[in-house]
Image (cartoon, rainbow, N blue to C red):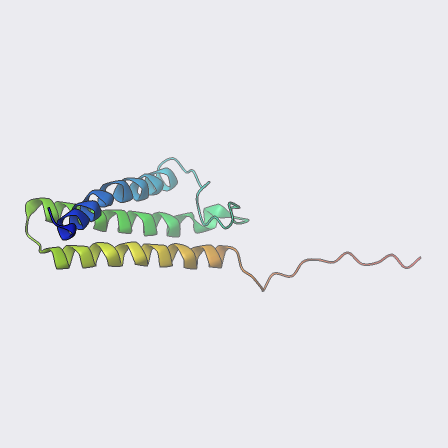
Length: 122
């Protein structure tokens, strides 16, 4: 067994838990209406997680679906290693980027100013 075969198997077997967690998160958001993992930043949810839930569900559903499709393509044997590893890697990175963008949009760094209580001048 060469190192490239071992890495190929590790990547292939790693796709299963990735797809499971992403599709489970989409299930929780869409069906169970559980918004506890929507756009978390430092463990804190946004002010209105229901507002961002459809976007988080779509990101997880699309990414999980692509990973399941890649798994099926590998099992059927209709795709070369270079192709499926590129699809899987691109999907993983794009999901991370999309989650980051959603999280930053849900927790803006500027734009919302804190209300300062007026000083009492008596």
